[in-house]
Image (cartoon, rainbow, N blue to C red; front, top):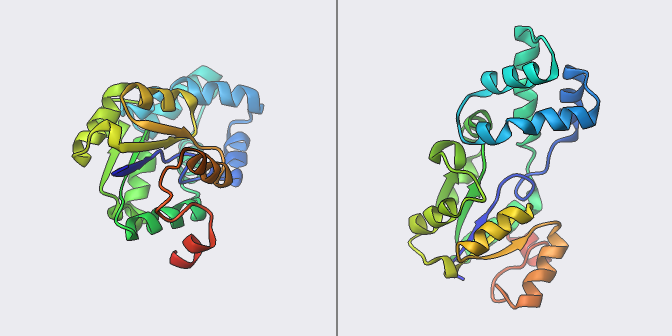
Length: 215
């Protein structure tokens, strides 16, 4: 492996439960209905076809809601907070890999409003070799083109990259593009999966004391 490519959502971050509860309260929808409406236009939001105001206007139309400016702003703010609650153990592993000389990248389906916040607040982003954001490229996972684009920017062959994502369809997309890939569930499972395949065993391992000392 010459590079490790990380998904962002639910790999390098974990959804903030407080922000999630706030979103439910702001809409007044039962959680199953909120989930249905929330994801209905998310792909187009990831593609960068509209900003947060456009996304929540579509949400309101689907849900039969009327949003005043204050509630609209609160929805955008809490949606950003939902996806910017970081996984410190995973970021510690990323930093350890970078310190060991491994090329790292992020390849994420990402909406413009969250990305704007991340660029303002997350100085650690600059340590990655490359960052691929769907809303800027106009391509979303699992389209093979987005994986090939990232490998091209890293100047490596797809076969030389390992991709980590929490969604099985995105892992399949990476494999179809020629990358090695693993489904991320927990740090312990990731460490076990790497060991089972004898991948990255000469590098710091996720969730170990070695990584904690390096972080």
